[in-house]
Image (cartoon, rainbow, N blue to C red):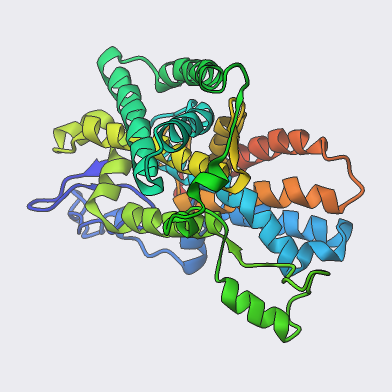
Length: 391
């Protein structure tokens, strides 16, 4: 549902949106429109899409509180959990925006590997500076995202089908390209050495706030390793990107005209077009954002590991969608939260790393994914219907 107030921009029916004053009821009784009915703080909180993800995170935390080793809840254990959460979360936040806009992108896992190949060609084969190599890699990702978006618009095929095709295309190009570059192997090494002398390396690799962590270790607040270095050297740089992108996307979604356009494009594209929303441009931009987010994850993981391979990012496309759905995004579009995707990604990290602190077999992680997805969809749908009065 979207409303075009007189003389104002489009306001979509999004959580937290402020709707314009509505006309009185036609029966002459003077009863105000039901949209102006006062809601309690509890009801407004229950309407938030991310409620299910926050509740799920609390339940998962309680489970590990009783089953995991105490070291899981140390600072080092927490940072170990946040690093994989951040890598998945960067993509999940972009996927959440795309799903709110009414589309899917199943090619992002393959984009992680393909961006690693492109980054390797620019940095190792062409010997370009690190920053220029990163920018060119993001340009390549933006081109792929543009192709995805335009194919969806021109062919009117479901984005599921178009991006599934690119899922295979990009993975195949990664395999063929790496074999051609390396002379027959599917791994490319040497990134650490090539990026070691760049002033931009700390923005994409390593840890942030190393100084305060060393100070804390010197004063006994953080454990020391046998070589005298802190057990927790700092905050992984991927976590900083994760938090920053989540903050920016949440502000954009809830406080800007573009955010209203995204909700409107996913909720009712025809009505949005009639109201002046550039739906095609919005959706294409979201495809570009999703591809660039996957490329950023590819760059971060390549620089941290010092190598890339053709199978990097496997299953990340499904995990990112699950994190977004756990965070409250609907498969039909027009509803969701990037903050919910943030918590959904953290749930993934807690479970995937947390199982190693317990006596449970880590293979139960796959079972958990399926159960969590099913519970999240049922919970979000039923709760939203009860609170909003949908039938």
